[in-house]
Structures are given as structure tokens and as C-alpha cells.
Amino acid sequence: MERPTLWLMVVVLLLGLLFLREPRLQRCDEIFLHWLLKNSQLRNARVPLTIVEVGRAAVSQKDDAEIGPTERFLRGAGSANSPLESALFLQAALEFKPTVVAFEQVLQWPERARDEEQIFVDQAMRVPKLLLSAELTATPDPDAPVPEIAGFPQVTGKRGDLVEFSGIGRQPSEDVRLISTLGFVNLPNEVADDIHVPLLFQYRGEVIPSFALQAVLLWLRVTPEEVKIDIGKYILLPQGRKIPIQSDGTVVINPNAAKMARRLSLNELLLAAQQREQGKTTIHLDDMRDQILLARRPADLLAPPDVFAATIATIQMNLFVRRVSWIFDCVMILSITALSGAVRKFSRIDLMLCAMAFSAAYCLIALGILSRWSIWLPGFLPLAAVWAVFLFSLILPKRKDAARTITVGGPSPTL
Image 1 (cartoon, rainbow, N blue to C red):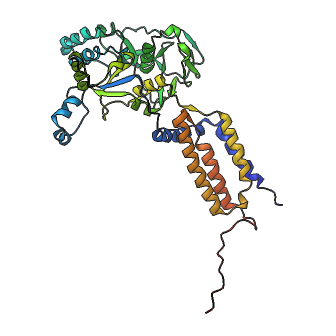
Image 2: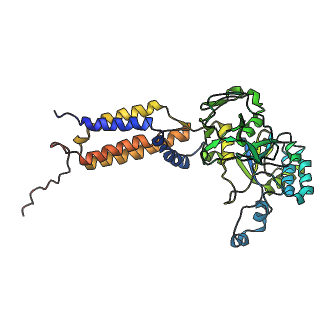
């Protein structure tokens, strides 16, 4: 009996171990994770989040001419950063008494809009929990006063990977800040993308929450003193809620989670508030009392990605994307290593068909597991190992008794 191809088994085993120890190779799995999240489906559920698109998305003149008057009214026609429009939004929102009202866009208005801003302030004073966005900066004005930001007192772990800031770059006016809570909407390129969203920043030695985390804390009525943070592991909230975080303070979210929220335009909200005053109920928004009401720009090229709504929904529904245990990687390495010793027993066509079938089945299984349990399986290690075995089989000498495709021809029939 011929001994198996030991050197091929050793090569596959060493490549697998190199993948487990090399962080740059492990980041190749991010491409597979993006594909999984793009094609996965979430369960049909409604998160306690309502998104109101304030303003109107940019459209061409041709498309604008084709829009009917009713649709144009429901979409809205004003600017996304107008004091009067923001005041109208708050007035309509107060009819449904949401737990938290949050503005994703930084509310900064010119000096000439002071009178209109005062109208907004009058409405904002009636909101119990108002969250406004601001932006941190690493290069503040040296002549500007240094604002104090309260951080989390219970923090353990290394803070070196957290993005550090030393000042506030953009924020609402002082009159608005006094009646609200600030949340920071920074998305640093070095740590953030459409699936990695920062929840923690470092500000002058203090660990502070981002916009999405601050919205959830207000929604849960949790103070910073009640939060326990172990950087690189988790954020522990009261009642057993745990948010897994990485060493840079980011959380892996499912971008599709934002689709589980209710989405309205400003004029739809205004119409619902008016009908509520008149005793009519064409749009049922009574459940908004226990929700976060998030005001953002419509989804257009000028608006930022809808990552904050997806992050809030992910935390609310506990839809965190978790990687499977490293034990799975070890099992896959050992299994493929053991099977690689038998490649010489099969033809190259059979091996290619097996590799294609394994790749398709593995991707389908990974999609199903992610959709059901929010657990993602690595793609680079098993798929690359299987196709590496196939490529090595092309240069290996075939055994004399290996399976081959043979055409058998019988004798021609005699007449």
C-alpha cells in the first residue's frame, strides 16, 4: 500500500497555522464577512427605533418633474438643517412622547437664523431626553476653552487602540447644549467602516461614549456610573446586557438591522400628529412611547452612511455579529490536512468538482448560520485550504490506479 502524500499534509497544516497566527491574513476574512452580511436575511421583527428623514433627498430636475404633488409633499421639500423644520419635527414628535429624540446631523445654524433657532429651543425644552450630535477633533483651536466631557468611571483594559481626541470640532450652540446631551458621530477611517462602528472614544484620558451608545444609554435610562467596560471584550450594562467590543472600541454590526426600524418622512410624521389631534389614526405610532426617534437626512449621496441607525438597532435587538470560536479553525485545519493525503486517489476532474461543491455548500451553510444566530464562519481559511489542495494536486504525479475517465467502445453491430 502506497504511503499518503505526507509533505502535502505538512504544507496544508503549516499554512493553516500561519493563518491563525498572522493578523493580516485573518483580515482577509473581512471580505467574506462583508459578502455574508450583504446577502444574509434577518428575522422579520420590529426594533424600538423610528427613523424620520428630515429634508429631501437630492433628485434631478427630470425626476422632480415626474413626482406627483402628494408624493412631493410626503417626501418633504425643505433643507435638512433648518431651525424651523427641526422645530416642527420636535413639535410633531412630542405628540407621541418617544423615550429619546436624537438628531444625527450636527445642528449648526448661521447667526442670521437666531430668531428661528429660538423657536427650536422653545420646542427642545419640552423634550425630556434630547440627544444632539457633535464632532470631536484631534487638533482643537489652542485659543478655545477646553470643554469637559464626563467619561465612564469603571474602565479596565488597554486604551492604546482607542481613537484619541483632544477637543470638540463641531457642536450646537450653547443655548441648545444646555438642554440636551451630546453624542459624538465621528467615524475615523482607521477603525470604522460599514460594519465596524466605534462605541468608545478617548478624550483627554477619559473614555467617553459615541452617539449610538449614548442613545442606547438614554433609552435604557442608564448612567455612566452603572456601566462596566473591559476594553477589547465587552461593555456591560445593567440587567445583564453585554455589548462585545474590540480593542479599538468598535462593535461589529449587521448593516441590515436598520431595515427593521420604522422609517418615515418629516411630512408623514406631521400628518400623523395632526390626525392624532383630530382623533384619526391612519398611521399607528402609539408604540413610539418606548422607542428612540432618530432624525437624519434622507438616504442620498450627500448623507452619511446609515450606520448609526444600524448600530442602535443591533444593540437593541442583540444582533451582534460574533465570530465562531478558534476551535472551529483548528478542526477545519486538521480535517482538510487529513483529507489532503488522499488526493492522489482521485482524478483532477473529480477533485475540482469536489472543491466547487464544498465551496458552494460552505457558503450556503455560513449564510444560514449568520442569518439565524448572527455567528459568522471564517471563509479564507477553509476555502483557501481546499483550493490549495486542488492546485497542489495538479502538479503531483498521479498513481497508476487513480480514477480516470475512460471511454469504453463496444464492437459495432453486424448487419
